[in-house]
Image (cartoon, one colour):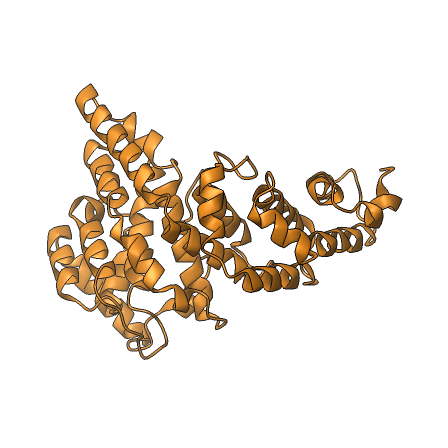
Length: 346
């Protein structure tokens, strides 16, 4: 899987303190006159929400010199500091984590990554304290303001870097000696055993529950939840112990309200609906607590109503998206098939 680096539209992510185009050009000019190590050293002394750090976060997507000069360590150090809200409403960890994701995505997608690249990924993957920071920042992740959308994106993307083994295969095969391969493999196994925690589950579920089905990263938040639950691929059965841990992180009333509200959203159609049905199917595995909440809160009924409304728009069943929605609705049908009875002949 190719890890997205940053949100598609960064036009609203420029630090308000220095919005003028000439200042952006000035920062680029300064960077061009610096060696990568000089730039990284300057970033370590700069404010995490500065235009200088922001530019390095962008440039780290495509310039491996910054990656190999230690910019990831600077971003990690900035993320692990105490955080405040900037004058434009941003949290001071947002630009550093954007930079860290840029580094991780660029290295994992590189055609010819080096041993140093793999070492950088190991350093990123071992920074488990970032999950602690995101957990502390949860009130800012679940805000309804537009700025919280970017925060949820960054948080879920960070979880995938840590939880999903998508960075690990590419970096392991580039090593030239078995000792290094074994070191990285053991590091990742140890890290994965640590990261499946209550904090990671709380972050992922909160981002999912507070995101809109029309969000451009709806698929990302669902994938983050799958990863926390131990699913190897989206929709695969979760690990039961992780499911129990996840349930203990939620407020039942908030869960029921948010899921039902999302199902009633007029944008809950097509792929968004399919992803929501798949998520509910995963959470309802066995006879655990999630299943009880789904039934007691009539989530299964609202899910079937959403499917019925979608089918009544005249969708073409030769379309793969419509087929996927119908297939994923099966888990809810087992609780109450009456609403779909007229469509079962398809």
